[in-house]
Amino acid sequence: MMMDFALQAVTRIINEGAYCNIAVNEVLQKANFSNHEKRLFTHIVLGTVENKIRIDYYLAPLIKGKRIKPYLKNTLRMGFYMLDEMRLAPHYVVNTLVQMIKKQDFKGSQFVNGVLRSYQQLPKPDLTKLPRKEYWHLKFSMPLDLLNLLIDQYPDRVESILEEMQKPTPNYYRINTLKIKPEEAVRLLQKDKIDFQIEDDCLITKTSLLNHSLFIEGKIIAQNPSSIKVAKTVGPKPNDVVLDICAGLGTKSMHLADLMENRGEIVACDIYPHKLRLVEESAKKLGVEIVKTVLADATVYRFEKKFDHVLVDAPCSGLGVMAHKVDLKYQMTLEKITELTELQKKILENAAGFVKNGGTLTYSTCTINKNENEEQIKQFLSNHQEFEKVYEASFLPGVSGDGFYICKMIRKDCM
Image (cartoon, rainbow, N blue to C red):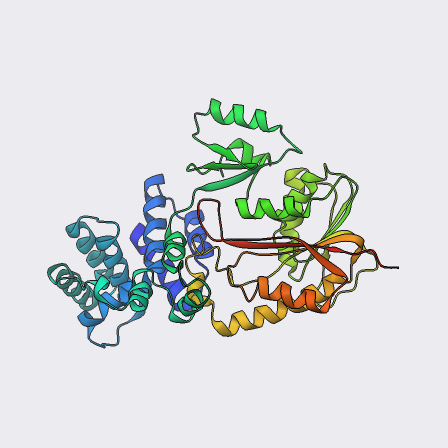
């Protein structure tokens, strides 16, 4: 039964364009899995999707251009992943998948059985003998357009970036000081014998805390170190007036409110109503009282007042967060990146008009694409000499969290 659900999820993601997190969570919420089955299901689905390009390379000579029904091809993809990466017992993998398919397609089950058994007997191609770019393309299952972009911008660091993009990430949380003192949160975690560490206000653990009372009661919130750095860079004080013009799910708005000690005003703006509903739910859960939501298009909406701080956490290609968005690389194209770059420009242009004299404009993304980051800001500053850059940092994905970019600018006093 678990394997049936895994096949359904993989097919939804690969063939129907469903987002990985949605497809996986929908199954986990409705299926009566044991904890072991939950972990196995998630591992199979995410691993199969993440490594699809390499798996298909190995699969190609065994199917020799045959037109195969999607559910059969995805069954084989899952089988290859379980055999190669998970190192599960071959008899378990073959028998489980064959029996699963046999329930609906006897002939198809024979085909799956034959391909999986042939795969075990044939020598696997040595990818290291391929030209370097092809090796990276297959080893890391990175689409060529995105790989070429990384090679162009980071010629000496491509392989290390690709490796980090495939490493499993720990669980990151921020302690919500509006509800609990950090030392009290630490005491409770130690009491429950949870291994963790705290670095730069970020709680890091291999253990999921989503079912822990601290999370359920809004005393901690899931938040990556890079996201935490953004609000700290904005640096609001109590009683400031802040605009988060691309609020999304409101994670940074909540952190800004924490830094402001729940005093002042934060306007959280987004174009999607369902996201703003989640912002409001999050504020209620976390005890945040100073966030006001506004449904608006950040490229054109006109605010009647000026703000002490404006945050543009811009829509971006997400090349810095692929470690936990394994399907993103298949959805993101150079054409989409060009469209996003133009959208970022429009949002920045609009947001700049809402910054008070002496106020700040902070731009952030979760990508490592320089055209969306350094080059975007360079162009903006060339057209807006009333702004001065006071802080800029770019981080590649790694031990400090996701890859991301932050630039803080101050609006000079103008007479």
